[in-house]
Amino acid sequence: MKSGLCRYGPRIVVRSIRPIKQGEEVCITYTDLLQPKELRHSDLWSKYRFICCCKRCSAYPEMYVDHILCDTTFLNNEDLNSDRRHLRDMEIEEPADILDQAVTEYLSTGDTEACRSYIENMLTKCFRNEWPQLAESSQTRCKLQPLHFVSLKAFIMLASIYRTQACELETSNHSEEGIPEVFDLNRAMAAYSLLLAGATHHLFLFEPSLIVTTALFWINAGESFLVLVRSLICSPEIKWVNLSEFNIIFCNGRSIMTCIDGSSLPCNEFQSTSLRFLDCVLRISSKVWLFMVSGIQCLTDVKSPIDFSCLGKKNVSHQILVREGVAAGPCHFGNEECVCIGCKCEAEVHAEEGIKNLYQLAIHCLVYGGYLSTICYGCQSYWINHVRKLLCGEAWS
Ligand SMILES: [Zn+2]
Ligand SMILES: [Zn+2]
Ligand SMILES: [Zn+2]
Image (cartoon, rainbow, N blue to C red; front, side, top):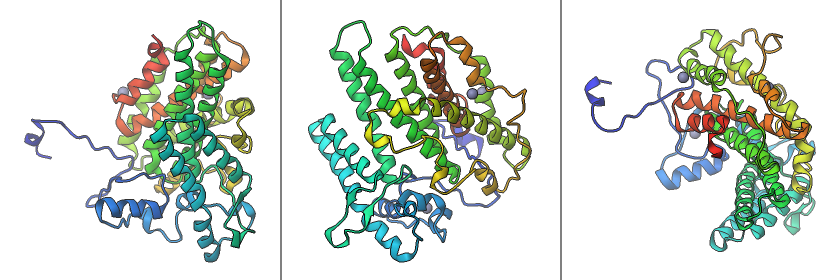
């Protein structure tokens, strides 16, 4: 760009998470990437009148992400053939409609309770394969899984409904002590937020363009867990984090962007950072997940908010690097000297074990979300400042 063009008005900074070859077409997103192909295309056509033929849209057979966002059959151990696929699209119509209807009704009536139970009942039945189908094909049942786009949409909706309900209850009650009901509402909100982050992250490992959404969902999950910790103990004796250490991680996000051109070190850095945090989040969440979902019927069938290997794809952490054509180098993860800075915060929380775990989960989600967001937006964005404030405890005052 000629320097003269930058002198007036707002500046637009374009960042890429992978190298761009000379002459290569640069594409941007016009639509919600967590939607399956059919919905993206109808969205694009109705709003912009074009048919997208990007790599993801034109892949045949369809990419894993588009497959899993729609899939309702593979848990039944049946082969996917074209007949089944057609059936698959029919099967899901009803739950998707129910979700849309619940949202529309909520927007007109503001009845959070009705909307919540409507969506949760639907999810419970679908996760358990108890959703009756159209009479003529009564032997087919709808089996949803947590990575289905209807599930993801439902988690977004439910997390926000629980948050609204917790806030309403909190403001209507003026006592100084923590209210158990508020805690339960916040617990549900945090459970859905974590599941949403974990599920989206799993998809991101196959589809790097989901990085923006993934970063945001991790940050939301981290914030939810902080809210949860705060509703458990009114004045948590938490020593807030010393940011200087975290800034190393946050700034590394930036160096990845500039060095991802095939020199292997930053990719190794990304890989090891990513693996290290995910490993921690998996470990901590496995300790608290049963507690998080107790009483929430539709989530008791979800075994882990992070590990979706039961859905058919295992050890996907290296996928993103392999796909971008970067050889996966030696991984720093597992090195004894490599101490997770999220885990270092453990020593600074004076609380019982359970609360400690929730707090640690919050820190890990925030740091990792912040890390991903610096890759997308650099280290001075709104989101990274938001994360910094949360980690320093400023947002509480
Ligand atoms: Zn496309
Ligand atoms: Zn920086
Ligand atoms: Zn850790």
